[in-house]
Image 1 (cartoon, helix red, strand yellow):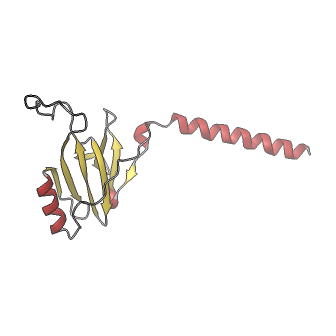
Image 2: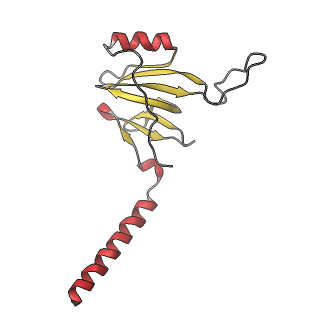
Length: 142
C-alpha cells in the first residue's frame, strides 16, 4: 500500500516537471515541418513565415494559408500595413486583403513570391498540380 502511494506521488511530480518544462519552452521552439528541411515558424513579429532549416528566410510572411502537395508548398501571404495600397476613392480598406501567392519547390529550392492569381495558377500547372488547391492557415501556438 505504501509503495503504491510513493509511485503515485512520483508520477505526480514527474507530470508537474514535464508541464513546467513545456511552459518554459519559447514559441520559436515550435515549428511546422515541411518537406526537405523547410519549416514554418513564428518570426520576431509573431507572424508565420517559412524558413530553410538553419535560419534562411524563404517566404517572409505573414503566411495566411498554405498546403503541401508532394515536395511543393503553396499558399497565400497576407498583406501587412506597409504592403497595402491606399484604397481607391469610396473603397474601404480590408484587413483581409492578400498581397499574393507563393509557390515553393522544396526539392529544387525555387520559390515564387508575391504572385498574382494567374501567375500562381501557371506555376501550379507547370508542376502538374491542379489549380486552386485547398489552403489552410498554419497552426502555431501563440
